[in-house]
Amino acid sequence: AATYARMSLEAETATLKGRPDIAREIYAKISDRFGLKEYKEAAERRLAAMAKADDDRAAAEQKKRIEAAMARETEEFGNLLLSVAARARAFRYDECIRDLEIFADGAGGGENVAIAKAYAEAIKAERWLYNRARARIRDGKAPLQVFPKKGAPGQDIKDFNERGLVIGSGGAEGEIRWASIPDAQVFNLFKFALDVPSSEEHMALAVFAWHREMKDDVANEIRAAVALDPKLKDRADKLSSGLATLSDRLAAAKAAAARLK
Image 1: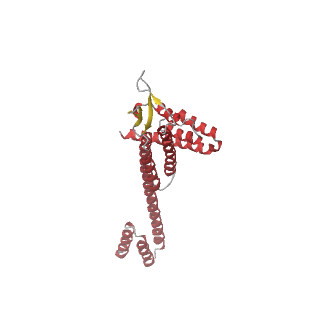
Image 2: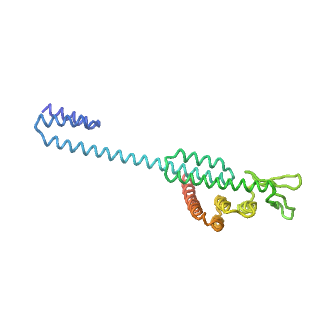
Image 3: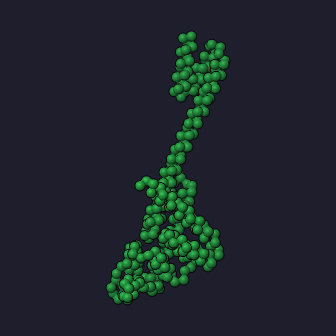
């Protein structure tokens, strides 16, 4: 009886320590020595049940870890999108593209990576538009004026940069910050600088308008692009869908940030 009790205790201890191989060996010895076939079968069922329970716990823990990792990535990606959208609005295109590409290269794949890559391409198109409009103004191909003060003479737009417009007449120059110009006027300035926009410029103007939450202009520019070049229909639909997805992601990120305050 003492031997039976000792061997049973050893088997139980091995089971609790996560050594089913040792426990199974001891249970087999108990069964053989004491002629307890049912004992061996019952022990085997118990070990199998414990193994399944361990597997289920491990699977549940793994699921929790994956869900937590996905939640962290979604939060980080949402914060990145908020930052990129704000910086793109301020014409800081290079760093926006860099950060989106770094994220895409470092993430494991999935929808967030696809969104990041598509957004980087959209910002590249807007950067091209920015450089093209600026070159036309600097080269005198887009003679535009602003009227900083009511009743005062107009001032030529000579250039622009991340800070704002460079204006002047004669040899004098001044600056008007972007922050003081309504979004609609900024959008129209870029559009007028292009004179008669091409289909590709209309596509880029849609992104420019999206960064300023000008929904009607986004739709109008995409329609104008397709009207000029019907072959762009698939790309235009993809851009429209991608911008809608970005809007949803930004709204979710803003809501999440608000909950943390």
